[in-house]
Image (tube, rainbow, N blue to C red; front, side, top):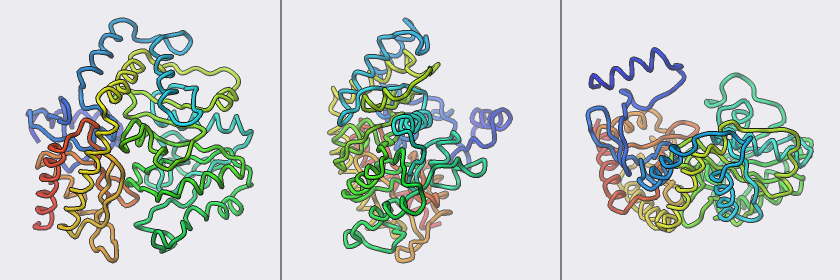
Length: 432
């Protein structure tokens, strides 16, 4: 590592919590970003196909978004929710226009963790009940409640979770817990929801919270029937459906604003963050009017709906809309999928390619029949890809899934460049 990068690393070790993880055997010190590219302390360019964990949804330092937030920062930077501001209400109006069904009223926060926490809070207030159903393999954030909802032990630090939360089976078809094969399985993972409720809960549900595609879980993508079945069961037992769109929202899945729209289910509450403001801290919880109105008492959010973040979020949505990025994510995402499947045909270490739009996962295995997770191999692959100038993410319960999520401005040429670099990295991994 070069001197400037080494100095940053040494200061991080000295002044930051050691639990703050970094990628790579030699962490990458980034100083600049533009479009789909990042640059390190030596000026070396990297093609970013992870987008800050699906956050830089319109590209690094997008000029239109940057101009809007700079103008706002020079006008009004902060007031808190105790005062009226145009950026906050204009963003809320826009979200009401693009979200599915009867979703209308928003509460703004700083992150996906807070957005999900707010969603659970209002679901409990509306139903007068406490119990929540989440999914195995899920990730919902790092607060005590969000970690309790999370269905991966590695992300549940601090001991046992909070009471009142149970975890149902996820539709992880590649590693089906029932050892079935879709579609002959008759969606046993979804239909098991009712028995789980009848045996592991009081039957008095407040909510069901789920990501349409599980992000940290490794981009697990359920069959088209899954959410139709589980939403009906959940509502039978009085619960509301919370769609966690922190990673799938704002066009990431291609063709539609929100991931759950691909499954034909209208949520009662929807959460978003990450790509909402193209990298600025911003989270939102939006609900049907009667649900939002059920939250009584006093509440504020000091930084939620911050004028600069709200203005950046509105500019991000406007740009996605004006530049046709929903359709671009669908078309280029399909091309990305095809190119990844070509790599699957070439490299036996690729067990499955899955996802939607510009949210594609590649699960690596040591043996396709046994499906043994290629845990050490993906660590080496990440280093190789970085050395070749390609930034990727990883996830999954075993940490063996490549997560690919470039900005929605991605082109077919960008895909070709990324595939070339990934192909080279996979070949080097097999030669080592």
